[in-house]
Length: 138
Image 1 (spheres, rainbow, N blue to C red):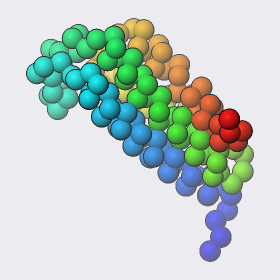
Image 2 (cartoon, helix red, strand yellow):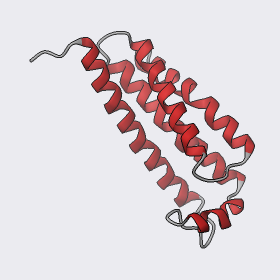
Image 3 (cartoon, rainbow, N blue to C red):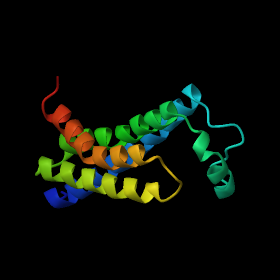
């Protein structure tokens, strides 16, 4: 059975976002190896997070941004590489989805203002960069 180009684009988008999410998780794993969480901070406990979030260093927040940037970068790359048609539109939609997910994530715990601004502003550009790298490799 042959998939229509629209159906292929939808499947590629879902797979690209899933793989991008795995990359964010990997980025966080590396981040916590480089800069461990504050002692006693447990992401499974809202009270623990609220009590210790102010102890996260600027370097920790910067690495969090890098981890978050991996998702849309990889997703944009995969979407541009494997979408059947309308590559640019698919990449833009993926960037918008990542932006919405990023905004929702900001409600999970307190973040510094500079982090919130940078985090929300980087998802779409990172997806576009990933898409451009896929279409025009360096």
